[in-house]
Each structure stands twice: as structure tokens, then as C-alpha cells.
Amino acid sequence: MKIKTVEKLQDRLNEDFAWRKKELIDFQMMIHSTKNRTICRMGVALLCAHFEGFLKRAANYYIVFVSSQNLRMSELRINFAAIYFQGNFDSCNETDKISVYSNVLHTFLDCYENLSFRVHYSQDKPLIKTGGNPSSLVFKEIVNSIGLDFTLYETKQKYIDTDLLSNRHGIVHGEKVYITETEFDETLKNILEIMELFKEQILDAAINEKYLKAK
Image 1 (cartoon, rainbow, N blue to C red):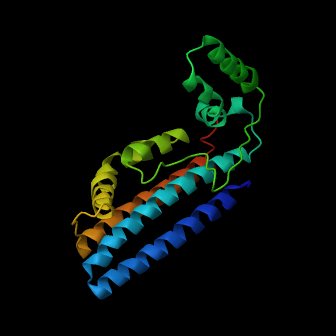
Image 2: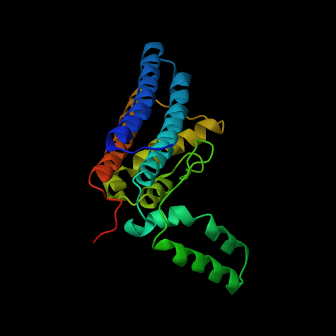
Image 3: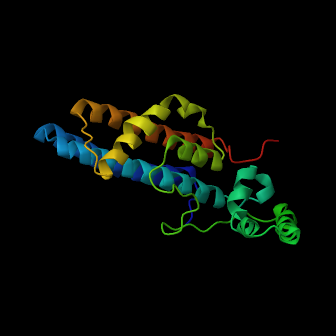
């Protein structure tokens, strides 16, 4: 996959966000029309799934966009080198031999200056993973991993960890957690705002070339 232009990136992000938002709004309408608290519980699980799915897809699309710009690793912020070489460092987790660390470090330094940033993405093998339903800490790691600023979301962590995840975990583990229509509406509103903000943050980074190393 290649995403060569900001316009193509915007199309990808908008398309992925739009179908998720539509499905969630449709579900919200069903909740209000049926007044069924069981359906309301189901809505929380669906919202959590779409939140996780969008974060992963959007972050990976941004990396593919950067990869499609034909840039050298040394021209990019260091987080992209970490993304590219993450597999090489896995061997360091399995040993305490200095020679292994030396070989990995030598490979990194030898390639870093002139190697082009090229990655291969597929839905089955994403470059950025969420590890399931993402907490605010996982979300922060995703944002930092692609070189963006998490400050925008610091006041919104409660919506992720408490209003969404805590209720979702209780529901899927069979606990008697009931959500009112008003509570669902509020959680949906806040999570959609976070998703849209993440989308706009990625587009801003692409437009203003924030993936480039500061000169």
C-alpha cells in the first residue's frame, strides 16, 4: 500500500472514520427508539471496538504516508527509525550477550544515514498495534510512537479509561453494568470527538511535515 499525497491520506482517514461514525449513530438511534438497556450495553462494546479500530488504522495510515514520501531515515524524526528497526531489536530481549547488542547497534548505525524509510503494512500485520481495547496509556504510546503530541488528550483520559473501558470490561465479563441513554450519548460524543481530533492531528502533521527531523 502507498499513500503518496495528503489528499489520499485525508480520503483514507475520512472514509474509515465516516463508516464507523455512521454505524455508531445508527446504533444510538436504535437505543433511543427501543429504550432497551441491553442494547445500550451492547453499544458500549461496539463503541470500544470502533475506537480501537480507528486508532490502529489511522496511525498505520500515517506511517504508510510517511513511507511513501521517499525519504531517508536520517531525514525523519527518530521515532520512525524505531518503527523501522523494531524487529531488529527483538533479539536483544532474548539474550544478555554484548555481542548481540553490538551487532544490532552496528546494523542500525550503518544503515541509518542513507537507508530509505520503507515499510510494508497490511491489516493482518499492522506496524502499530493496540493490544486490544486501548486505555489512555496505550493511546498515549500510539501517539508518541508516530511522533505526535499527546497533550491534546490529557484532559480526555477519563472518557477513555472510565466512561468507555471500565464499563466495557464490566459488560463483556458478565457484570451487571447498566448504562443509561444519557450516559451512552455522552460517552459516544466524547469518544467521537477524540477520534476526530486524532484524525485532524494526523492530517496537520502530514500537511506541515511534522515527520521531518527538526533542522
